[in-house]
Length: 386
Image (cartoon, rainbow, N blue to C red; front, side, top):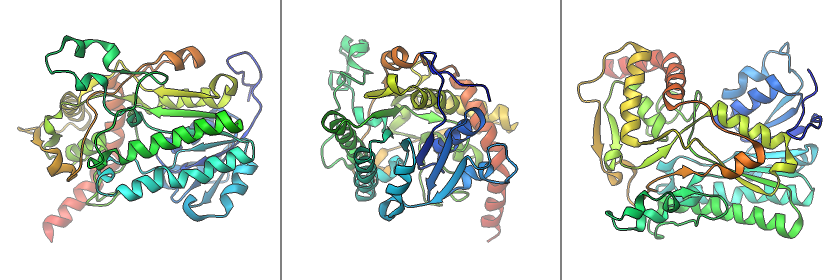
């Protein structure tokens, strides 16, 4: 492998990375990238390894010996500090990040995203190890614009809705709206990491993902996840399409979101890993402001893409409206828009996303159709027979 250079033209030394949550959607793509394109070694920590099995077996793989899987639940495992000490860099991806859980399992959500992350921050700080911590775009909460009168011309002014890492306030709903338990826990751990940097010299980078999309994301209920589970919007819609059910639009699907392709986003993370001088001490939005749609528009686009990918005709009524209370339960609330400002990541790392919304949906739905269509047909036939 030719010597890799950082953005300032210096050779990149091979490093050992302790990756917590390596078996998830983001972790699996990051492990793939690190194995295929770099000389770095990965200590992959997670409870499950299904999404990275293809990287661990067989022993004849070109990167054999550079990735080790450690089955660990970071809640209560004395091996954690030792593994962090063995590495040059720790990446923490572990979290409960399914909106349906935020108001139905708020205690688990707060423990998973704040309490369980505390030892990781502590061990990195005490052992002078660099930390890349994955947060969320949800820490921004609601936009300033959402509090303006509906007919205010200022609602169209980007200053009132574009989310900037260093200036945008974090605005959450009332305590009764337990949906904000996730965002609040994530914000508090960010503040703790920032304080460790300021007071104890911790080298840190915080990543705020804006809806990263691609193969292996989330789960399909009843196939590779709980039957009663409710994954995030894109996987919910995929599940409906695969089962030939109308797509459920919560509160009319008026919320606006931006989506970025996982492979584009992983490029940004690799730049952070290999350019510590440019990434340390920064918080980075990682999203694609060009791929902005309402959830209703997303449903329409996914229906068109899935028809193309699967060859199946569109349903007569492709979508139905449901209330958030009916879909998520009591205590749900939402942010109106999530559009990232890209100035800081562009200036520090020169990163820009490339993939259009249509292309990332086509890649994701092709994978899901290929992976799940047969299993779903079988499970539906079984339930019909019984």
